[in-house]
Length: 376
Length: 223
Image 1: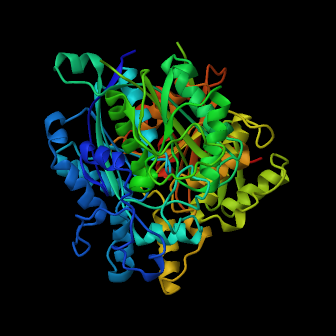
Image 2: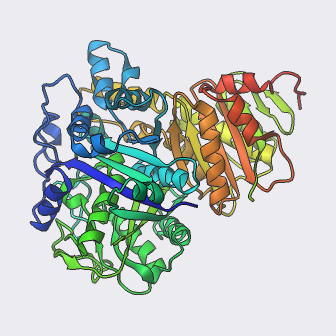
Image 3: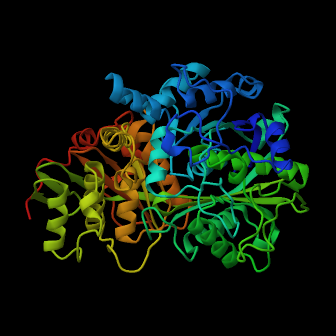
């Protein structure tokens, strides 16, 4: 069994490009969520989004492809490519190509997730067709991270690159609008007045490596991927289980894989969509596992819900928090839900111990938990 | 050393359903009919609550998962069980995406239908099966053009070996055909070995091709 480490991470969100940019945005407690601009649909103006300002809505390139290219031109990818394995995490990928196909008669199959995977492989000069698409609703990023880490731990691969991406699109806005799942004031995770989520543009890239290989190559390590667990609620096709049992099962699985106890967890990067049921479910799950409050924060009040990118973005930022020994505020929080009081905060906090728990949940009752460990 | 074996397999087409391990082959007129047969035989007590809204891929996925459970002797419904489901196929939810967005565009881009939106994730068909069966193990979709089913079998088997689940279902489906394998740890019976399937299904992506390559359809007896 090999130790698995994160050797590189980069991201682009509505705050801009790079981890420092996101960290500063979070520290400022200023949300990047604002009026929806790119879709140009008047009816969605009531649903604010966290869109990347640098994307060109007139471009023939889709928003997702523009996001990915912003990342691929960064040094992180160039310095550590090629990894042995490649994973793509997304929920709808280049969905704008399907939107266009209905208007101009182009081939809708261009919008398939497998096609985006091939496109990224070509752009990065990877061996075509060897990449793996992973999709697990809003837990896609965590699933991709867990599957990649599992292959390295078992010795099936020495390194893996994971790309996770999704963009704000008319397709997804229309869908979440039909579910009445969006907050007109912008997402406010764990707030007592929360009314729903806000969608956001986001893409991230992470490189995982066998710890021995990283040492041999003298590559600095951001954090260890210590454990992971996955489960399904088998309760409802869109809503989470009210009692949090499914997510608690995933967390327990991650603790077992990591070989640690709940008391070893220093802080939690929550899924925190800002919907009534998700945030309540998470608190139920946490209270099943932890006997006393553990510091929690969520990013979706700041950068919106980036869907298939969320899990990887949140894990990468949790690795940053471990390194900085500090967790960011939960942006958008003003009056904590009574169930979350004492766990969440609108202020940054200092943390001391070495393990971070990252959780995600999605449609279909899908749950994932990943544990990261600080490495000095 | 944990050994994972493929213990059961099911295949659904527009005109027949097969439970390979039990050598059960029945004529049917598609996925809905395949589910009705299971109800008539007493394997399930009723149809899914929201079955009427299932898109075609969800219908075939759902039916083949149930037939595979019957083939494996896994109970359907009742207390929740740690059984995982992974789905594969190069098209993902493309047809459901098209149906949802075309409906939205045809309605003047003013209102979308949530009952169509729900199926625009490649995991929703799997989740409908997990919900009906009460399966709480890992659930995700993955595909790889080059590795095809060979790679998916490797991933599903590893998940079965590494975690506390009692079985793992691997499903591939399109609107007309679906195939499902059941993998179990330290099982007494074996329909196929994981290594055999990895070797022979490398690069195979269509459900019908899986069945043709394995040669399980011919020679099966009717019930």
